[in-house]
Length: 177
Image 1 (cartoon, helix red, strand yellow):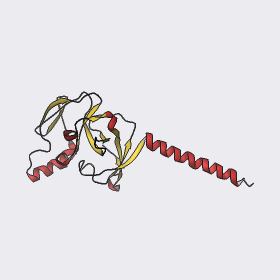
Image 2 (tube, one colour; image 1 turned 120 degrees about the vertical axis):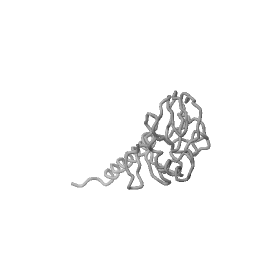
Image 3 (cartoon, one colour; image 1 turned 60 degrees about the vertical axis):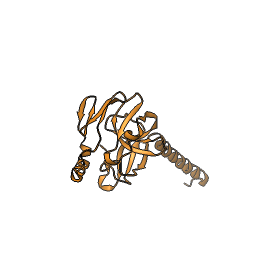
Image 4 (cartoon, helix red, strand yellow; image 1 turned 90 degrees about the horizontal axis):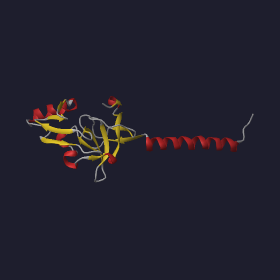
């Protein structure tokens, strides 16, 4: 049995159109692939790593997010404080709500600092409270990061998405923690 070529073409056009529509809608509302630029999150992320952002998220302490800074540039940083948190830093020790927090993602950078004879990764700062609808973020490469110490609090509205998966380099592909 032979099908009408016009009907078959229309059928294929529908499939292609729906596929493109689903991909575009998913990318716009659910996830987005992005490239990391710069060294502010080293060694967690290297320059030109590829990651996937989830656009439906609940941000918690120590999650990694991409946000648009006031100058229009997108940055990837680690959330240190969520709305209502009390944050302080003393002798390179982070305190969240009065509790000392381990930051194992800083271990490699701490070793580098020790080898260079530098005293600290992060300068001390007095306790402050993160305002409602804002976040306090820091880069993992604390000696070379434009983060909340420079930009101030990050508005909830400026968040593009939460980093969930690394796509490249191949030896580091997987869920981001």
